[in-house]
Image (cartoon, rainbow over the protein chains, first blue to last red):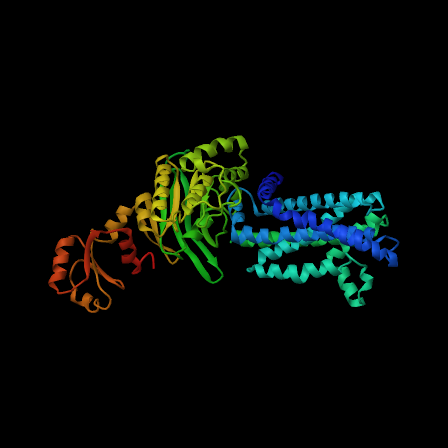
Amino acid sequence: MVEQAAHVLSWHARSYRKSWRATITVAFLNPLFFLFSIGVLLGGIVDEGRADLGGLTYLEFVAPGLLAATAMQIGTNEGSFPVMAGLKWTRTYHAVVATPVRVLELFLGFFGWVALRIVVAAAIFTAVAAAVGAFRSPWAALAPLAALGCGLAFAAPIAATAGAVENSSVLTAIFRFGILPLFLFSGTFFPVSQLPAALEWAARVTPLWHGVTLCRELAGGTAELWPSLGHAGYLAAFTLAGGALAIRILQRKLLK
Amino acid sequence: MSSGHEGEPRIQAAGLTKRFGDFTAVDGVDFAVVAGETFGFLGPNGAGKSSTMRMIGAVSPRSGGALRVFELDPAEAGPEIRARLGVVPQEDNLDLELTVFENLLVYGRYFGLPSSLIRERADELLAFMQLADRRQHRVEPLSGGMKRRLTIARALVNEPDLMLLDEPTTGLDPQARHAVWDRLYRLKQRGVTLVLTTHYMDEAEQLCDRLVVMDRGRIVAEGSPRDLIARHVEREVVELRFAAGTQDGAVARLAGVGDRIEELADRILIGTADGDATLAAAQDRGVEPESVLIRRSTLEDVFLSITGRTLID
């Protein structure tokens, strides 16, 4: 099973060699632009007023948030249109399951590839952020893994959705009305305590808030074992439930 | 490339059924295919051919009946069966971003073949499929005919014991179609077992040793192309083609001429053992077609005589 999934993963890697240029903005450049414009430059002004950021500078506050949000975006991008393409547009998934590869192995290979994409981007971002002094604690070294959990918690349910829906406009709507507001309001740029109470609680149930918080606590050196495991478990639950659903949907679509 | 011993069973189906909700796509069909033969499913769109092929390909669970492929049950041994199949689907599903060679490489890996072996086979297959000069080209801009040939090359990369070709030349221009037929004919000569679906009677006649005619989920006739023609229709057909609006009443006037009369929208077909005599008899009845044609009967006529409809609407 692992071997077959690895063949599927290496297919994705080979395809990526043809298309990586189109992905570097979202995966690498945009997050770094945000890090410098919002974190370093805007942060310089914010820090004058000393907002209540739990003792962190604004750069220290926002960098882990951007890390988790970047992971979310990669997970969402990779989990959405590529799945729809494999099923409906280029139909390459149908080619894979006509071979000895099973749907489960197809999914695991695909998902492993998404995980690799997220973790590489997160590691690069973490290295740059560390270089500009955005992290306080050596635990920040674990932040890319926390970001991975955050990215997969989006990739899995989005993949299930992309498999289930007939029309790509549903995916576009998720980006516009789901991912963008999450990016702006789930604690990436400001503490969710700034939100009205109802919205604050809405923000706290999103996987992004858990990812942001876990990254931030690791990087700021305030992480404690049980709350951290709670965040990780929350992200894992989204990943597992979304993944199980995605596998079932792919089986239904590919093995009619 | 070999397909094992002649006559060894490849596919056995009994009462094979596929339902999608209330719709019965395949309605209890029986057939068997042995190693070394080229077997066809001939029928119009929606006859249940592709559904049958997908069940054989172990990518579609059957709703009823029995099915064995290589004497294995697809419900239990999907990966084992698929390991020995070469599948050419109705719609190409190549990776358009990759090169011709990379498509073979990626696909071959799914069969557990080492890259070095795939490389060797790819060179042979691309030469055989007349794609050697495209080896390093990206797939996307290739012509439809080249993509089809690449899909066939890809299906051969695991040296399958059975090839499943679903409408292998649908959508191709006549020249590309003949190129594909030529390659399939060579595979057949090498002893590769081919199972294909088609709604082109000339494709079925040229390639198939044996075929079943499908209509609305059922098998309505079975035999070699020659048998089917001998059994179901007369040797020749007189085609009377009429200008719009001049066909009315012609069938009534032709009563008793030839052995069998079929009326279509723009022409009347008369099945007969002697085309010239029948045409003379028809002209004696005073019908005035715009043009006439005497030809040998084809599988198209077989389908028409059994179902009352044409293969391509």
